[in-house]
Amino acid sequence: MGPEFQRIEAFVAAARASPRAPAGPGDDAAVMTRVRGETCVTVDAVVEGVHFRRATGRLEDVGHKALAVNLSDLAAMGARPRWALVALGVPRGFSIREARALGAGFGSLARESGTALVGGNVTRAPGLSLTVTVGGQVARGGALLRSGARRGDVVWVSGTLGDARLGLALLERPGGPAARRLQRHPRLARAALMRQRRPSARLALGRALVGLASACIDLSDGLVQDAGHLAAASGVALHLALEALPCSAALVAAYPRPADRARMAASGGEDYELLFTTPASRAPAVARLARRLGLPLTLIGQVRRGRGVHPIGARAGPLRGFDHLA
Ligand SMILES: [Mg+2]
Image (cartoon, rainbow, N blue to C red; front, side, top):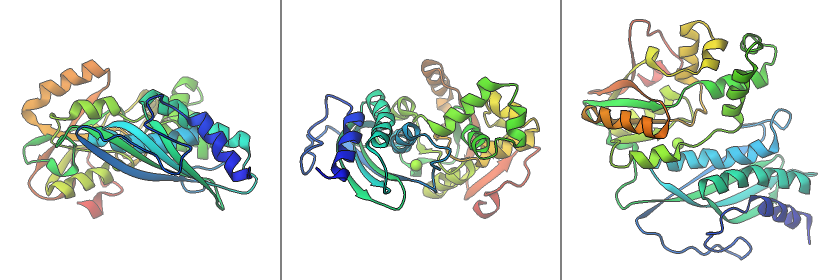
């Protein structure tokens, strides 16, 4: 039994999730029963030195995040996760104990989300990387697309923005101004760190938006940039009220100046919230959904004729990303 084989065994044993796994892992290929409706498939990689550092990242968190970022893409499509495939790249000296830790983080989220690990592979690599492919199920014709926003629709965002970026600032600059301001608020600092280390995909929201949202995207690169993708795909302009962006207590404590936290919320990245549009007449249904899910859904703008993303509101200053998107 070679060391690579032992490591994939250790990862799989820790990550093995749902008893309703169609078949595998362990065979040469996974066998899956055909689903009713349609299957959404996506792939994303988490790479050492690019997405995390071994010095500040815990392997359980890395395993969790590698799956979470993919589940967020399924959430944006309105799909229910079904299965995942994992390709691991491991550096020399990566131990079985470390493979198990990585698998444990992946596995706890897999179980929670009903995602079955159906196969995996491991190769030697210069740094640690996890490439995760996930498949999810959605009713025929029900998938939420980026291209459905129409003039007169309104724009919504879930949860709060900028917290993951704040968490990154706390990790990278433990003596920086944000970290110093949060010293008296350890609970808020922990919450921001969790948003960075263990993001959660808005799966329940995504599924509930099928038939309600006209377009949807998940926020991985920052609100302004991802809103730009939705605007371009729909052939419309998004006018967003930046003062209306939902901010957490942690962001307010870390950035007392409204302009500073608006910048973090607008361009922070790694929020993994959903940005979506609905006809204006569906606002009461969105408000009911927010109550049912216990999740803030904030009206942040309008869909108008034109292209790009435009700030509205008195204090709308220039923001990173705005110039080339507008
Ligand atoms: Mg995405």
